[in-house]
Amino acid sequence: MQSTSTNDTRPEPRWLTGLVHAEPRAPLMFPYLVYLLILAGQDLIPPSGWPIFIGFHIVMTVAVCWQFRRHFPPLGRAHFVTASVIGLLACAWWVAGQHWLDRSRVFGLSLGGRLPLYPGESRVVDPQSELGSGSLFWAFASLKMLRAVTVVPFVEELLWRGFLLRAFVNWNHYDQVAWGRFSGRAFWGTAILSTIQHPDNWVVSIGCWLIFNGLFYWKKSLLCVMVCHAITNLALYLYVLRAHDWRFW
Image (cartoon, rainbow, N blue to C red):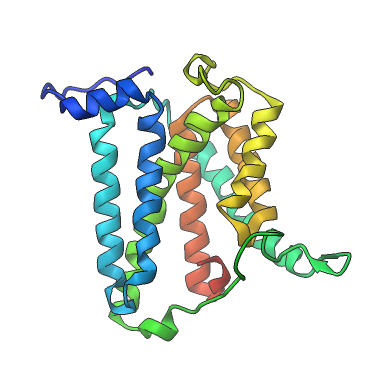
C-alpha cells in the first residue's frame, strides 16, 4: 500500500508494523471495524450517558486512525465546491427519495420499509423523549453531528471507496487497481452491498452510493468523497433538527 508522507520521525510500534505486513488491508478496514465495534455498545448505555459515550467513540476512532496514519493512501484534493454541491444533492435524494418510497408499494409491500429478510424491525425514536429538549439533548445532538461529519466520512470512505471499490475488481491485489478505475461490477456491487449498512433506507442507500462512486470515478480523489459525505451528513442532521424528522436520525 502506498503510504502518505509524514513529518513524524518517531518509530512506529513493532506490533503495528507487523500487523500491516501480515494484513495490508488493515489500514483501510480496521478504523471502520473499530468504529462499528464501539458503536455496538451504545445500546448498553443509559440515555444520560449518550453524550459521554459519543465523545469516547470519537476519541477512540480518531486514535485508531492516527495509529495507521503512515499507511493511508494519498487522499487527493478536496474539490470543495463540487463535493459540497453533490453532497447537498445526495442529502436531498436521501430525504425526498425515502419519503417518496414510503408512499410507494410493489405487490402490497412498501419500498420504504426495512430491507427484505433483514432481521428486526424499523423503529423511529425521538431522542427528546429520552433526553428532553435541554442541554443534555443539545450536547448529544452536537456530538452526534460532530461524529457524522468527521470520523464517519473518513472511516467509511477508507473502506468503501478506498478498499471495496477496488477489491470488487481484484480482491487479492486491490492495491494494483488504478485509483478511480471504473468497473461496473464494483460500481453496482458496492451500492447493493451498502444496503446492509442502511437496512431501513436501503433503496435510497443504493442511489447515494452510486452518487459517491460516480464522484470518486470522476475526481479520483478520496478526500473529495469524504468532504461530499460529510456535507451530506451535516445537511441531513440539520434538516432533522429543524423538521424533527427523526426517521433520519
